[in-house]
Length: 165
Image (cartoon, rainbow, N blue to C red; front, side, top):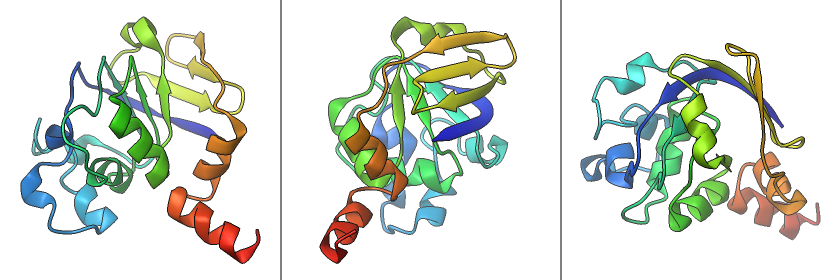
């Protein structure tokens, strides 16, 4: 699985209410949620995003309440991947269940700037910063997590298992 996109950099402790404020939780429509992604930080943030762009954030991304709407809003905004120093554990699990890959890179997040162009290979465990001509090696995701992502999350994975795929 490979991704390429422009970086939108966020800070530390971005909570799920910043990702998708509670007032927008009246739907599970991914595109509608995506239209309000990061509205708790900047209501116009989503207008700056293009399909395929990548979020890079500081420590504890996704902290706060456990809401599956948060990773869905990120996906709905056209962002296929989040890279961060670290993630809140519940958000981490929810994201993979919804089909949103996450990569933890510790302090290396500080070496990536707003607007940098990244090429990310989940299978190799590699982030190439094309803007700075740098490579960050990351732990490879286990095969079962890659398989979960390939089919679009836990629900699709279970549907495929039931069908015998």
